[in-house]
Length: 184
Image 1: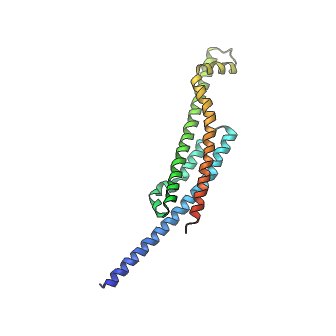
Image 2: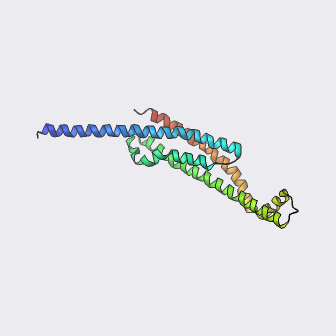
Image 3: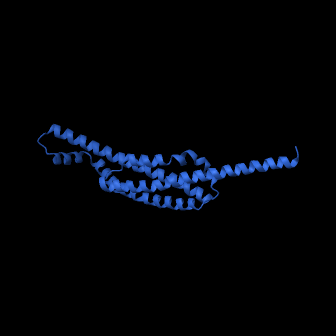
């Protein structure tokens, strides 16, 4: 084998590796951009659902989580993006938005728990004194649940604030999508 043949083999391998990295970058770019575009609509959906029902629907939060599948399964490939700021932004976006989504789920779950306990307490009070109207039994139950009532009132303030912070992630998703669109 001549030395030029060995050099040609090396150059061929380098070219093939470069092509594979470019393909990986293109696929990851498409997957992340698709997720981010979908996440923007889901953030709006969470806000709309809250406005209509005063409920954060777990199904919508799970949709957001499921849409991250491509990133979650390929985050080790994030290095195919040469721009370190872009890599950090993508990582930070997914990490911080996941924390916000988990927090929203916890807040809604806690709201459900308090509502359920209140309903159980009202039912127990009405069983003990059937002459009480529902509203009167509710006032008595709230007397037993002062701490939960305060927590519930705080949840009614903090959940909309948390939902409002989703607009920050919406903006970040849109900006990252624009940046990804500039990569060839």
